[in-house]
Amino acid sequence: MDIALFSMQKWVLFILVLARTAGIFTLTPIFGAEQSPKIVRLLVAVALTLVFLPLVSLVGTLPSDVLSLGALIIREACIGLVIGFVCNLVFQAIQMAGQFVDFQAGFAFASMLDPSSGAEAAIASRFHQMVAGLLFFATNAHHVLISGVADSFSIAPVGQLGINAQVGAGMLGVFSSLFVVALRIAVPIIAAVFLADVGMALTSRLVPQMNILIVGFPVKLGVGLASMIIAMPVIIVMSRGLFEDLYGQIRAILQIVTM
Image 1 (spheres, one colour):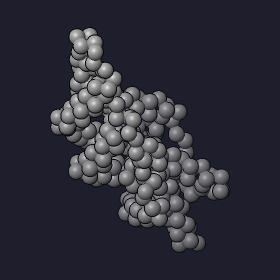
Image 2 (cartoon, rainbow, N blue to C red):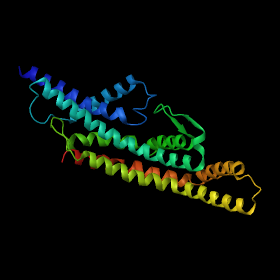
Image 3 (cartoon, rainbow, N blue to C red):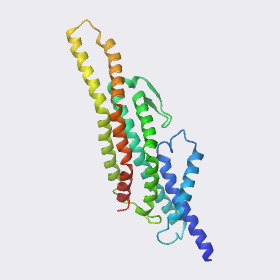
Image 4 (tube, rainbow, N blue to C red):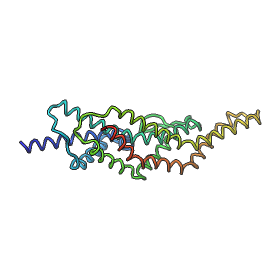
Protein backbone atom coordinates (compact mmCIF):
# COMPACT_ATOMS: atom_id res chain seq x y z
CA MET A 1 0.00 0.00 0.00
CA ASP A 2 2.80 2.43 0.89
CA ILE A 3 4.60 1.58 -2.36
CA ALA A 4 1.42 2.21 -4.36
CA LEU A 5 0.87 5.54 -2.57
CA PHE A 6 4.49 6.56 -3.20
CA SER A 7 4.16 5.68 -6.87
CA MET A 8 0.88 7.61 -7.17
CA GLN A 9 2.42 10.67 -5.49
CA LYS A 10 5.33 10.62 -7.95
CA TRP A 11 2.94 10.42 -10.89
CA VAL A 12 0.87 13.33 -9.58
CA LEU A 13 4.05 15.34 -8.99
CA PHE A 14 5.23 14.54 -12.53
CA ILE A 15 1.93 15.76 -14.00
CA LEU A 16 2.03 19.00 -11.97
CA VAL A 17 5.66 19.78 -12.87
CA LEU A 18 4.92 18.98 -16.53
CA ALA A 19 1.95 21.37 -16.46
CA ARG A 20 4.25 24.19 -15.32
CA THR A 21 7.05 23.49 -17.81
CA ALA A 22 4.58 22.98 -20.67
CA GLY A 23 2.96 26.31 -19.81
CA ILE A 24 6.34 28.02 -20.00
CA PHE A 25 7.20 26.61 -23.41
CA THR A 26 3.77 27.50 -24.76
CA LEU A 27 4.49 31.24 -24.63
CA THR A 28 8.29 31.47 -24.60
CA PRO A 29 9.58 32.70 -28.00
CA ILE A 30 11.87 30.40 -30.00
CA PHE A 31 10.75 27.36 -27.96
CA GLY A 32 7.06 28.19 -28.30
CA ALA A 33 7.17 29.73 -31.77
CA GLU A 34 4.74 28.60 -34.44
CA GLN A 35 7.52 27.12 -36.58
CA SER A 36 8.69 24.89 -33.71
CA PRO A 37 7.07 21.43 -34.05
CA LYS A 38 4.65 20.68 -31.22
CA ILE A 39 6.25 17.28 -30.61
CA VAL A 40 9.64 18.97 -30.09
CA ARG A 41 8.15 21.40 -27.57
CA LEU A 42 6.48 18.53 -25.74
CA LEU A 43 9.68 16.47 -25.64
CA VAL A 44 11.67 19.44 -24.29
CA ALA A 45 9.02 20.02 -21.60
CA VAL A 46 9.06 16.33 -20.62
CA ALA A 47 12.88 16.28 -20.54
CA LEU A 48 13.02 19.33 -18.24
CA THR A 49 10.29 17.81 -16.08
CA LEU A 50 12.40 14.69 -15.58
CA VAL A 51 15.39 16.89 -14.67
CA PHE A 52 13.44 18.96 -12.12
CA LEU A 53 11.41 16.08 -10.67
CA PRO A 54 14.06 14.84 -8.16
CA LEU A 55 14.42 18.41 -6.82
CA VAL A 56 10.69 19.05 -6.32
CA SER A 57 8.46 17.84 -3.51
CA LEU A 58 4.69 18.04 -3.22
CA VAL A 59 3.49 20.51 -0.58
CA GLY A 60 0.58 19.22 1.47
CA THR A 61 -1.29 15.98 0.98
CA LEU A 62 -2.05 14.09 -2.18
CA PRO A 63 -5.24 15.41 -3.89
CA SER A 64 -8.15 13.22 -2.82
CA ASP A 65 -10.43 13.88 -5.80
CA VAL A 66 -10.30 14.80 -9.47
CA LEU A 67 -11.45 18.39 -8.90
CA SER A 68 -8.60 19.12 -6.48
CA LEU A 69 -6.09 17.60 -8.89
CA GLY A 70 -7.56 19.60 -11.77
CA ALA A 71 -7.31 22.83 -9.75
CA LEU A 72 -3.64 22.11 -8.98
CA ILE A 73 -2.90 21.37 -12.65
CA ILE A 74 -4.56 24.64 -13.73
CA ARG A 75 -2.61 26.53 -11.07
CA GLU A 76 0.72 25.07 -12.21
CA ALA A 77 -0.11 25.74 -15.87
CA CYS A 78 -0.96 29.36 -15.01
CA ILE A 79 2.38 29.83 -13.24
CA GLY A 80 4.16 28.42 -16.28
CA LEU A 81 2.19 30.71 -18.60
CA VAL A 82 3.12 33.73 -16.44
CA ILE A 83 6.85 32.87 -16.66
CA GLY A 84 6.59 32.30 -20.41
CA PHE A 85 4.67 35.56 -20.83
CA VAL A 86 7.37 37.55 -18.98
CA CYS A 87 10.01 36.07 -21.30
CA ASN A 88 7.79 36.80 -24.29
CA LEU A 89 7.42 40.43 -23.20
CA VAL A 90 11.19 40.90 -23.46
CA PHE A 91 11.08 39.78 -27.09
CA GLN A 92 7.99 41.90 -27.74
CA ALA A 93 9.72 44.99 -26.30
CA ILE A 94 12.62 44.63 -28.74
CA GLN A 95 10.22 43.95 -31.62
CA MET A 96 8.09 46.92 -30.55
CA ALA A 97 11.15 49.16 -30.92
CA GLY A 98 11.38 47.95 -34.52
CA GLN A 99 7.68 48.73 -35.04
CA PHE A 100 8.27 52.31 -33.87
CA VAL A 101 11.05 52.59 -36.45
CA ASP A 102 8.88 51.02 -39.17
CA PHE A 103 6.11 53.53 -38.58
CA GLN A 104 8.42 56.56 -38.48
CA ALA A 105 10.78 55.64 -41.34
CA GLY A 106 8.18 54.24 -43.73
CA PHE A 107 9.33 50.63 -43.62
CA ALA A 108 5.77 49.58 -42.78
CA PHE A 109 4.88 49.78 -46.48
CA ALA A 110 7.03 46.70 -47.11
CA SER A 111 5.73 43.96 -44.83
CA MET A 112 6.64 40.29 -44.72
CA LEU A 113 5.22 37.24 -42.98
CA ASP A 114 6.47 36.71 -39.44
CA PRO A 115 6.72 32.92 -39.01
CA SER A 116 6.78 33.13 -35.21
CA SER A 117 3.35 34.76 -34.97
CA GLY A 118 1.80 34.08 -38.38
CA ALA A 119 1.12 37.81 -38.84
CA GLU A 120 2.72 40.39 -41.12
CA ALA A 121 5.69 42.34 -39.80
CA ALA A 122 7.71 45.12 -41.39
CA ILE A 123 11.45 45.06 -42.06
CA ALA A 124 12.78 46.76 -38.91
CA SER A 125 10.42 44.76 -36.70
CA ARG A 126 11.62 41.45 -38.16
CA PHE A 127 15.24 42.61 -37.93
CA HIS A 128 14.90 43.50 -34.26
CA GLN A 129 13.22 40.16 -33.64
CA MET A 130 16.14 38.29 -35.22
CA VAL A 131 18.57 40.34 -33.11
CA ALA A 132 16.55 39.35 -30.01
CA GLY A 133 16.73 35.67 -30.98
CA LEU A 134 20.50 35.81 -31.43
CA LEU A 135 21.04 37.70 -28.17
CA PHE A 136 18.81 35.23 -26.33
CA PHE A 137 21.44 32.54 -26.88
CA ALA A 138 24.51 34.84 -26.97
CA THR A 139 23.74 36.16 -23.46
CA ASN A 140 22.87 32.66 -22.16
CA ALA A 141 19.34 33.86 -21.48
CA HIS A 142 18.13 30.31 -22.10
CA HIS A 143 20.24 29.28 -19.07
CA VAL A 144 18.68 32.15 -17.10
CA LEU A 145 15.21 30.97 -18.11
CA ILE A 146 15.91 27.40 -16.98
CA SER A 147 17.37 28.73 -13.69
CA GLY A 148 14.24 30.82 -13.22
CA VAL A 149 12.06 27.77 -13.80
CA ALA A 150 14.10 25.78 -11.26
CA ASP A 151 13.81 28.56 -8.67
CA SER A 152 10.09 28.86 -9.31
CA PHE A 153 9.57 25.53 -7.55
CA SER A 154 11.02 26.99 -4.34
CA ILE A 155 9.32 30.41 -4.65
CA ALA A 156 5.97 28.92 -5.69
CA PRO A 157 5.97 25.33 -4.36
CA VAL A 158 4.02 22.64 -6.18
CA GLY A 159 0.78 21.68 -4.45
CA GLN A 160 -0.33 25.04 -3.08
CA LEU A 161 -3.75 26.20 -4.22
CA GLY A 162 -4.50 29.76 -5.23
CA ILE A 163 -2.81 32.59 -7.13
CA ASN A 164 -2.52 36.16 -5.88
CA ALA A 165 -5.07 38.47 -7.53
CA GLN A 166 -2.37 41.18 -7.82
CA VAL A 167 -0.54 39.23 -10.53
CA GLY A 168 -2.35 41.29 -13.20
CA ALA A 169 -1.00 44.53 -11.73
CA GLY A 170 2.46 42.99 -11.58
CA MET A 171 2.31 41.98 -15.24
CA LEU A 172 1.15 45.50 -16.13
CA GLY A 173 4.16 46.93 -14.30
CA VAL A 174 6.52 44.65 -16.23
CA PHE A 175 4.86 45.62 -19.51
CA SER A 176 5.07 49.37 -18.80
CA SER A 177 8.78 49.17 -17.93
CA LEU A 178 9.52 47.17 -21.09
CA PHE A 179 7.50 49.67 -23.15
CA VAL A 180 9.75 52.46 -21.89
CA VAL A 181 12.84 50.42 -22.83
CA ALA A 182 11.40 49.83 -26.31
CA LEU A 183 11.06 53.59 -26.76
CA ARG A 184 14.63 54.14 -25.57
CA ILE A 185 15.91 51.58 -28.09
CA ALA A 186 14.03 53.27 -30.96
CA VAL A 187 14.65 56.92 -29.99
CA PRO A 188 18.01 57.40 -31.83
CA ILE A 189 16.54 56.17 -35.12
CA ILE A 190 13.27 58.07 -34.65
CA ALA A 191 15.24 61.26 -33.90
CA ALA A 192 17.34 60.86 -37.07
CA VAL A 193 14.23 60.34 -39.24
CA PHE A 194 12.53 63.30 -37.55
CA LEU A 195 15.51 65.54 -38.37
CA ALA A 196 15.32 64.29 -41.97
CA ASP A 197 11.62 65.28 -42.02
CA VAL A 198 12.50 68.75 -40.73
CA GLY A 199 15.23 69.09 -43.37
CA MET A 200 12.84 68.09 -46.15
CA ALA A 201 10.22 70.54 -44.85
CA LEU A 202 12.77 73.38 -44.98
CA THR A 203 13.89 72.27 -48.44
CA SER A 204 10.30 72.34 -49.72
CA ARG A 205 10.02 75.94 -48.50
CA LEU A 206 13.29 76.95 -50.14
CA VAL A 207 12.63 75.05 -53.38
CA PRO A 208 8.84 75.04 -53.93
CA GLN A 209 9.20 73.43 -57.36
CA MET A 210 10.56 70.20 -55.81
CA ASN A 211 8.03 67.38 -55.40
CA ILE A 212 8.79 66.63 -51.77
CA LEU A 213 6.61 63.49 -51.70
CA ILE A 214 8.60 61.81 -54.47
CA VAL A 215 11.99 62.93 -53.14
CA GLY A 216 11.23 62.62 -49.44
CA PHE A 217 10.13 59.00 -49.32
CA PRO A 218 13.44 57.45 -50.49
CA VAL A 219 15.33 59.95 -48.32
CA LYS A 220 13.40 58.79 -45.23
CA LEU A 221 14.04 55.16 -46.11
CA GLY A 222 17.76 55.82 -46.58
CA VAL A 223 18.09 57.81 -43.36
CA GLY A 224 16.13 55.18 -41.44
CA LEU A 225 18.27 52.33 -42.75
CA ALA A 226 21.55 54.21 -42.20
CA SER A 227 20.60 55.29 -38.68
CA MET A 228 19.52 51.73 -37.83
CA ILE A 229 22.97 50.48 -38.89
CA ILE A 230 24.75 53.23 -36.94
CA ALA A 231 22.58 52.66 -33.85
CA MET A 232 23.17 48.90 -33.89
CA PRO A 233 25.64 48.97 -30.92
CA VAL A 234 23.04 50.83 -28.83
CA ILE A 235 20.31 48.38 -29.86
CA ILE A 236 22.49 45.40 -28.91
CA VAL A 237 23.59 46.86 -25.55
CA MET A 238 20.06 47.79 -24.46
CA SER A 239 18.60 44.50 -25.69
CA ARG A 240 21.34 42.62 -23.84
CA GLY A 241 20.35 44.48 -20.67
CA LEU A 242 16.78 43.23 -21.05
CA PHE A 243 17.90 39.60 -21.22
CA GLU A 244 20.34 40.04 -18.33
CA ASP A 245 17.45 41.35 -16.21
CA LEU A 246 15.18 38.45 -17.22
CA TYR A 247 15.96 36.44 -14.08
CA GLY A 248 15.02 39.36 -11.83
CA GLN A 249 11.78 39.89 -13.74
CA ILE A 250 10.82 36.22 -13.34
CA ARG A 251 11.57 36.21 -9.60
CA ALA A 252 9.67 39.47 -9.06
CA ILE A 253 6.52 38.25 -10.79
CA LEU A 254 6.68 34.87 -9.00
CA GLN A 255 6.91 36.61 -5.63
CA ILE A 256 3.77 38.58 -6.55
CA VAL A 257 2.01 35.35 -7.58
CA THR A 258 2.67 33.69 -4.21
CA MET A 259 2.15 36.69 -1.90
